[in-house]
Image (cartoon, rainbow, N blue to C red):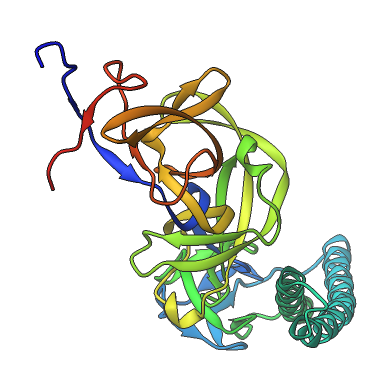
Length: 373
């Protein structure tokens, strides 16, 4: 008994099947899919703006009024310049109408493709990923169509403003020029409030549709190559329950960013769409911070043990399996890994107990004891 090896007190865990997801986490921020900058079409005096950031407006609503500055008589050169500006605005309007035609065609095609895939997915003749991509393409073309229509309204307003400027340049006391909303949305920023002189082209406010949010994240280039359009993700720690999202685009160009520790890193921008219903994230706003958990791989019913049970065995991995109160060196093969758990594909069976965090005092055949529960 005196020569008998003492038992080592150890912590253990049981190998058991569970659902496993290999994930990667990164910080991100929300942003409006379509942001509209409202500029002053003419120089003059801006009347007091009563709208506040957060106010909802409808398309065509008057956002601000500008009293044009009294114009001096036009010389030949100035009049030619004003006429050229009018022709340019009319050309921009024609171009916007052409973009609307192209956007309508793309949107119609995307809708038909989505409608075609719905019955195919139900019949298992097409994959769910194809349907998700078709839905994302439909939503993207819808947004592009809305943006083109808004550009047409802005171009039409510029044409109207240029015509009014040319017609009334020599008239004193010209009527105030109304600046209208290009879309229905929410005011996000306002540059001026009180009555003030303003120059043509100066920024008045920003607006957008808060129901059309997307998420952008700066991802390490080594991690971005593991992502693809359609990769699922979870949005966490934003102030509410976890939300579902999907990668829409991975920008092909990278950039250098210095970390908080002063290390230069190569990163690229990844854009995600929220796939959860809008009612679940309607309190999210523009430029809000969120945590993104990308789901790189997942497996149901994987035989799993804690990651701390593994130790290096040459070029492979091994664990100490507990058998008859003794530690037995057991080589294993691993699969998916998370921050805390690892899948065992060979070497262990369901119900086997393994030693957690084995140290140098543990060797093959060591007598071990688990603490009483």
